[in-house]
Structure formats: C-alpha cells, structure tokens
Length: 384
Image 1 (tube, rainbow, N blue to C red):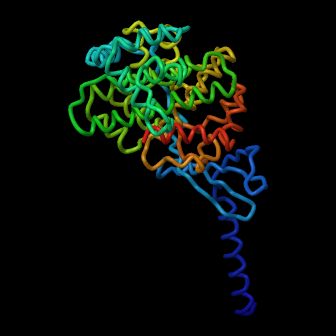
Image 2 (cartoon, rainbow, N blue to C red):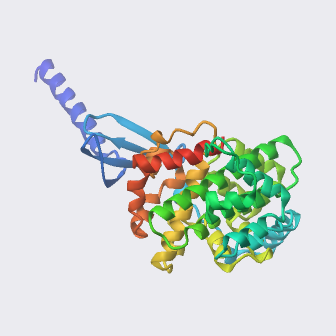
Image 3 (cartoon, one colour):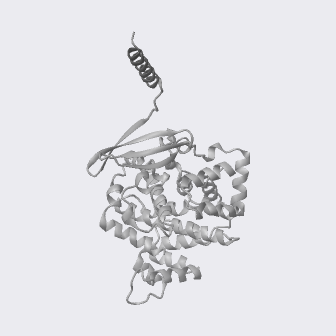
C-alpha cells in the first residue's frame, strides 16, 4: 500500500473520530415559550437558557431579522417563596411586634377617614378639626395643577370643587404621610420616595378603577395607599433599609432582602399594623395579599373573580407607583405594556398572565390610550 493511501486513510479515520465525539457531546437544553404578541407585525419567541456560572436565566427576544435583546432573569426569582402571616414562627412574630411598636400611632383622622358614605358637610366637619391638613388641602387645590382663576379660601369650597372622593383621598394621604420621626437624611429621602410612590399608586388605582367601572374605586385607592404601611414601618425601625429604596432596588430584591435578613416582608408587617390600628378587615386582607402577584404562587386560587380583580389591580397600580416615583422615570410614552420586557421590572413578570386570569384585559387598552395617558401624566406631574 502506497504512502499516499496510508495518509489518506489516517486523515479519514481522524475526521471520523472527531465527528463521532461531536455527536456524543451533550447539547444545552432550552425551553421555548411562545407568546401571542408581535414585534414589527411579526411573530417572535422567547428562549430561556440557564447560565450555571452566573445562576441566571437569560431571556432572549428573537425577531425575524435575527436581532436579539437580552435581559438577565435571576433563577432565584422563579423559585422565590413569598412569606405569609400563617407561616410565622415565634421569632418572626416578635420581630413584627418590635417593628410595629416602634412605629408611631396613626394620625387621629386616619381611621375616621376610612368610613364610607360621607356627605360634604360631614367631611367638612371632620377635616376642619385638623388645621394642618386643612391648610395642605387648600395649598393643593390652589396649586398650578388646577389652574384656578380665583383662589379657594375654605375647605368647604374645596370639597365642592374637587369632590368628596378626591378631598378624602388627599386627606388620607396627608394623614399617612404624617408618620415616623426619622433619624437621618437617607431615611428622610427614602420616606419621601415611598410617600410619592404611595400617592401615585393610590391616584393611578382611582383612575383605573373608575374607568373600568369597578365597585368602590375610592376603597381600592385607599388599599393601594395603605399597602405601603409595612414599608414605612420597616424603614422607621431599621434606618439601613433606606438603601433598598434609594438605590432603586426592585420589589423582588427588597422583599428577598427583608425575608432573608428579618424573616418578614412589608405585606406581613402592614397586615399586623392594620390589625393593631383596628382598620377595616377588608383593608387588612388587602394589605396581607398585596405582594402575592409578585410570584406565580397558588395562594390566590381560592379568590373570587372580584377579589382577584381588586388584588391584581391594586398590585399593578402600586408597581406603577414604584416605577414613576423615581425622578428619572416620568415619561409615560416609554410605558408600552405592563410586562417585564417593556418595564424591565421583575414585578411585572407575571402580570399579563394575571390580567388574563382576573379578566382585567381592559387595562392593557387603557395604558396605551392617549386620553387616559394624559390623566396619568397629570398625576405624575403633580408629585414633582
């Protein structure tokens, strides 16, 4: 056999061996999830692939042209277990007691303002008992926001002009704002940011609920406002928690941090605080489940359709409140849809699934409606 033939056979054997080895190499498994959404009027798919080194899931949005947008999704988010009050041990219960005991007593007007069915004269008689809140409401109604030609000088006139619901909500927000004595500048800044988020959430929810013909929009708006009680109490108790709010940590990151370090979360703290203050039971329950839509947990499976709608609507409003409470997030035109892909916020990761489950589809149309956006924009501008 010639030398050339031997060389040819050797090369062929080497190539065959390499091909065999390549075929035996295990391939990375990817799960493909298709969504009924479009980009540039064409179908797209999301691919989730696990990065074992960084312990993240890489979410890749592929369009037909071959371009890719990627975002890192922590695998621990998909496995995250939210704590609820019925699973607390003695140490966690003691932590909540210490937090709530350190938090100041509620404003004297907070509980009376929670009542329903105010007549204008009843609301007038209640609010005028607090000179500071009366003055603040008059300052708000005479601000450039309402562009009045003639100054309003008494609270009764303000109630007639703004309406009972809006004056009541403003008074509630002011009563909640009048809370802790803060120790340092970081706490004060974090508190301002939390109050701004709660104000925005409350106002957003009132707009959504009214437009969607929900029962008692005012009560839902109050639920949103008081959903931040737990955050305020934690911030008051632990000054170092200010960093969680000032560095724009996501809701998931904050909740994970509080659960890991203190064994509790803001919803549990808020629930017990509402109980301690003897707020209405519906408010207490609303606060307790205010974080449940963060995960895909089955805790809401037993909820009625109405309770699901209210829980998810308040959650969405609070997440929008968080999103626009930062100075850098004031442009509503950037908000194309309520999902993780558009907002970049993990808090919206399961939102579209939950919207479908609770039959809240109209909210997707509202969020891109030009007329409705103007209303939202007016609320955002009011807080700066």
